[in-house]
Length: 392
Image 1 (cartoon, rainbow, N blue to C red):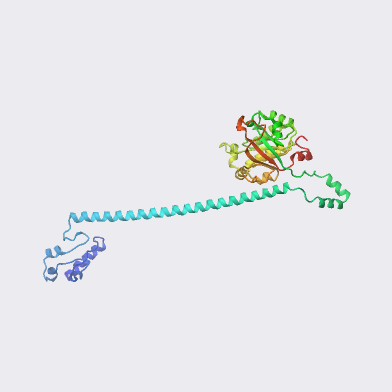
Image 2: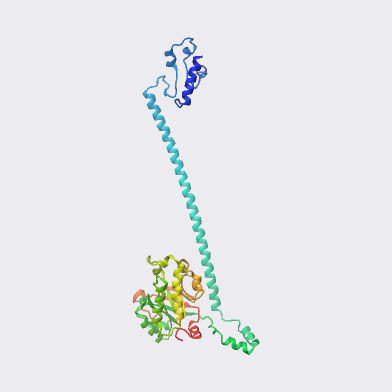
C-alpha cells in the first residue's frame, strides 16, 4: 500500500475526531497534491526508500504544529491556547453587543407603545370632558332662556275640558322656572362675617357648613342666625367622613337634628371629599359601588327627613370614585370647578371659584379673606315652597 495514502488516511481520521485544525497555505503544486493532510519535502517525496525519521520530520500536522516550524512543543500549545482565548473573547463580545442592541430595541418599542397609549387615553379624556361641558353649556343656555311657549300652552289649556284641568291641578305641583342667583359657601375658615355687608355686595344665598361626621360645627348657629337676620336665603352642607353605609346614615341623622329648627331655602348637601376617600384605612376608597351606596344612604335619609338633598362633588372625584349616574338619577349636583368656562357637570349649583372676595368677610381674618363663590341655576326657594319641604 502506498505510504502517502496511509499517512493521508491516518490524518483524515484524526481530523474527523477534532485533533487538527486548518492547514496554512501550501507553497507549491507538488506540496498541494497531498494538500490539507500533510506535506513531505521534495527529496523525501521522490525517494523510493525514505527513512522513517525523514518522513516524520517533514510531516506537517497543522492541528499541533501551530507555527509551522515542524516541531510541536510548549510554544505551540501556548499559542493555540492564546488563539482560542482570543476567539472566545471575540465571540462573547459579539454576543454581548447583539444582546444590548436587542434590549435597546425592545425598550424603544415599549416606550413608543406607552407613549401611544397615553396619548390615546388623553384624547379620550379630553373628548369626554368636552362632551360633558357641551352638555352643561346647553343646559345652562336653556335654563337662562325665558319660556317661549306660553301662547302654545294657553292655546292647549283652552282646548282641554274642565275635568281634565282639575286633574292637572291636583297632580304634583309644577316647579318654578330656572333662576340664576349668586351665592357663597362659608365655614369657620371665614371667621367673623358681617352678613348685611355680604348681602349688599350682591350675595343672594349662603351655603353654611353645619357639621362633619356626627358633630355640629362651632360656627353653624352663629352663621345661620346672622344670615337669616340679614334676609339671605340659606342652605347647608355636611362634611361626611363615613367609611361604611351605616356611618353615612348616622351622619345624616346628626345633620337632620342640627338643622331641624330652621327653614332652608336651599338644599342640604352631602360633602364627601378627597380627604375622606384617600384615608388608607377607608375601605370605600377601593369600591365605587359601596361608596355610592353610602352617599345615597345619606341623601335618602335627608330626603326622608323632609329636606331637599344634593351631593357636593366635582368631575374628577365623581368619575374616579363614584357610580355617578346612580346619584344624578335621583339628586342634584353641587359641582366644584375652577378656572373653567363651565362646571364640567350638569348641576343645580356651580362653585366656580375658591378665591373670591366679598365685602363683609374681613381680609385680616382666617383664610386670607377668601370665600368660595357659587352660582345657583334653579329657583330653589320657590321649589321648597312648592314641595312643602325644608321647613315650609
